Length: 373
Image (cartoon, rainbow, N blue to C red; front, side, top):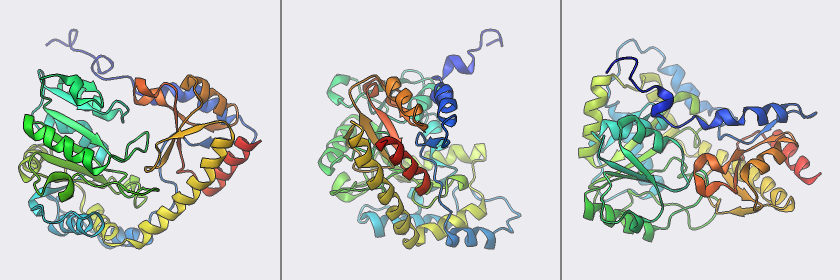
């Protein structure tokens, strides 16, 4: 293909949605009290000292790391899944875990790395993180956003994404639903990948369950992968530490491709990852911080006339007052608050906004004051 006829990036990928928020961000910054940015879920609290200390202690790392990762890194992932999420009795071992350089990179590259392409169908939730669609576009597959498997008719997807707890809605899928989807995918030979990056950000009972749990998969990992991240749990977004776990055959396919591409998590980050996964105390403390911020924002939004849908988990409040989401974004910007329009996440979000509670305590209090003014 000549350079003249080769599709540009803009022709191959969806528009980067956050560029559309620029003018609203500028208006919010002009507020006398400065901007309160509740549009993104970027951690603002300090990375735990136990993690920083582990990184420093392993800073002398002259050799190349292995793509498969250190055995103790993978064991820490296994221990965390068993200890905190009941992932036992399903045959998950070291060959079913792969550390990766941030979950977003993995999600975007996974379809292509699993050999999917033109003629394949990838299905993801109707309200979803945009990277699922990007991953399909990068490998040339078709993508459908839907929560109704019956709407697909007889066609069997090559890959189906789940996301529980959901970004942006915070919805938690019950175990009965997980089991139904697992069975549906196995009957059709569909790879099921569950994005569980907010698994420990739950605020209501019953909490979320990993698709790796035996109650969700019947004690078998066949055809199943799950994606986990330390960015939110441990304030390690800057470390780019995540992992994928599940069916060893699928993990092996990913590993084979990633070896050829040199996609290796640096050794010092692996040491930090082990320290973070082995320590639950800092995660509980961070959970309490987020719970307190959520408890301040939730009634303030209700008093300002918003209805909060779902939001039982994740780091966001899915808010609406029955108007176009951009009208709502503008209303917030006039008060110096930046939120994310629901349309970023699919057509079904056109009357919602996503309000993050990852800002500092001081900024959250500013938002509350402005909402109550």
